Image (cartoon, rainbow, N blue to C red):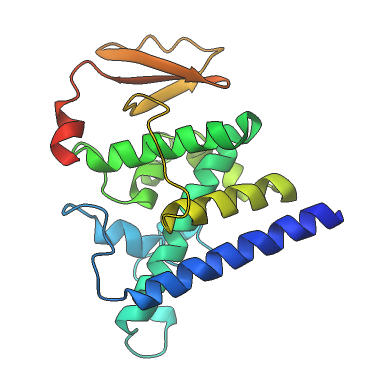
Length: 217
C-alpha cells in the first residue's frame, strides 16, 4: 500500500470518527430519515462488519453485553448506514469519480423519500438481497461486496459517505430527482420512466410523475 493510500485511509477513519461524535452529541434525536424507517432493516445491518450474510441474521444487537444505550444504538446505526452508502458508491460508480458516486448517493436518498422504497440507506441498497436474485443494486446479489477492494478508491468512498452523512458535503441535484439508473452500455427497456441526465457511465431516470418525491421532501 502506498503512502497516499495510507493517508487516504486515515482521512476516512477521521471522518467516520467525526460522524460518531456527531451521533453521540445528538443521541436521542431523530436518527431515521423519514417516518417510515424500517428498523428491522437497520438492525439487520447494524454491525461494524456489515455484510449480506449478517443482514440475514436476526437480532445482531445481542452481541452487546446487556441493553445498549441510546447513544450506542445511534452510533451503530450511523456506522451501518455509512458503510452501506460507501459500498453502493464504491461498487456502482468508483470509475466515475466523486461526482459519479454522489449521483448514486442522490438516487439512494431520493428512493428513501419515496414511500415505494425502504426508508433507510441499508434498506434501499440491499432491497431484494434476502431473495438472492432480486437486488436493486447488482453488487448486493453477485457477491461483489465480499471481494477485495482497491484501497484508495474504497477510502475515498468511505470518506465521501461520512461527509454526506454528517452534512459536511451537501448533495445537490445532479440527477434531476432520479430514482433509477443503468450503465450506458445496456438497454433495460424500462417503461414509465423519464431520462434526466447522464453522469459518467450511468444514465439516470425518474418516474414520469415526481409527486411521490415531492410529497416526501
